Every structure is written in structure tokens, then in C-alpha cells.
Image 1: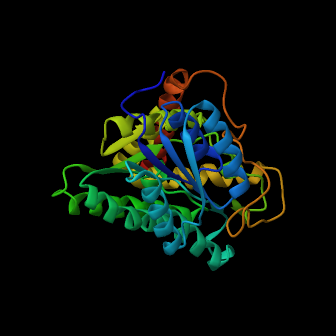
Image 2 (image 1 turned 120 degrees about the vertical axis):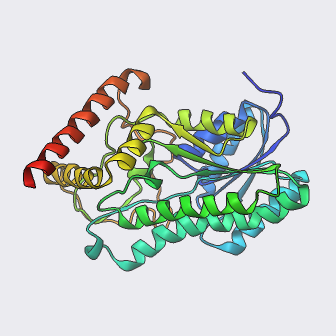
Length: 325
């Protein structure tokens, strides 16, 4: 059902060509908004724009790389010139690289941080003068639970997400004198997107997200809700809340357990060749919303299993830690 409160609003989405960004575009299109879709893959954007147009939204496509600060300024200006204002800017573009820290090329770590952290900073820096001139606006940052939970063998990714959470908190504090400019952070759990298929991979093993994984439409729906009712922090999926609490209460155990789980997985995973994925260039595959990793059943059905699994893991961790002493 369309929400009239969003009709005609200008919504900018970076990283819109696939995954969560694509899901967000399709969800916002149902509300008859004016969509500005940005990513590096212009062909995928044009195909998505056609779908959103059929659903009921006007669409502007802007090919742009978030690591280029000037490109983000051009994106903001194009959106503002098109409709006269920007109501919501969604920082969403992101990449992933997996592998031993020292075996992963430093330029790969750098590119992950430039995309996931500096890309969001570039977007915020480009739109903020427009928001201040309007004296209103909503900036939504798709951070992920990786902003709280470290990802072993994804050190560049973790550095970018932890840094992003710090950047956003500082910006929120700075903008307390602007009551109608909102900074809204989203922390989804593991999503069923093609992102992991696009990842740079130096583990030489096939990568899969840890279950349970959630439909990216849940994140898209959360973005719509935040656009309607701005909220500082939103956790998407019960797993995200459990993992955040686990790391807050048992930081050392949680960190050790994540390392153990990933090492075990890498020992048993199918071997594949190393790849840079979509880190430095777009790829001609995986431009869909879903990645095909979803588990059957509704997410709520997994809550008791998730909670039980985490409790058992932490109990085992505590026991082993006490035993070693």
C-alpha cells in the first residue's frame, strides 16, 4: 500500500544496482516518490529504473562512484536540480573483501575502506549543505551489524564499519542544533544479497553468509519506515540485536568464537580461485535483489534457535575460559 506522506519526496540511493539498494528502490517506488538511483553499473541502473517507473515513480539515473568526492557532489546537485530539494539520502553502496589480513593486498583493504567509510562520508558531505539550506533532511546510513561485531578475515570491512559508526555518532552530536536534520543508522543482520558473490576473495574458498540470512526487503521496509519516522538507530532482524548484546557483554569470547567459526567453515568450504570481485570494477553478474542464500520460513521462526545457539556458544566459551584458568 502506498503511503501518501512519501509521495513526491526525492529519495537518493547509492549502491542501487543490486542487493539492498535495489530492494530499497523497488520498495520506495511503491510510494510514488522521485527516485535518484546511483551506482557504477549504469546498465543495471537503467533496467531498475524501468521497473520502478512501471511501479509508479519518476526516476533519475546517475552513474557515480562513491569513492569519488566530486562525483558525489555532482550526484547531490543533479538530484537537487531535478526536483528542487533532497528529502532523503541513503548511503548504501558497499563492498566486501575476505582473506588473511597479511595475505590480502593492501590496495584491497584500502579500496574497502574508501568505499564503505569514505564513500559514506563523501555522500554525507555532498548532501549536508543542501540539507542545511533546506533546514531539513534525512540521511540514512546502512551500516550493518558489522558496525558492532568484528569480522575475522574481513579486517578492512570491520575497520570501515566500526569507523562508519563512529563517524555517524560524531555527526549526530554536531547536528544537535539542527532539529529537522536526522542521521539514521541501520544495523541489519546477514542479508540474502549478491554482495558476497561480488566480494574480493583471497581465502581460496567459496564464501557463504552465516545463517540465518534475511530477505533484503526487510531492510528496504525499515528504510521506508525511517524515512517516515526518523530514528537514530534501527536493528533489522533479531539476530542483529542478539549479536550486538553478545559482543557488549562477552566481547573477548564473542571475538574468539567468530574467529573459530570462520576458521572451521574455511576448512570445509569448496575451493575456488582468488578474485578481486567487484572491488575495482563492476561485474556482469549478480545484479538481482537476492543472492539465493535464504533459509525457508519467516525470520521470527528462527529466533528461538538463534538465541539457543548463541547461549550455548557463550556457555561453552565461558566454560573453556574458566577451565584454562
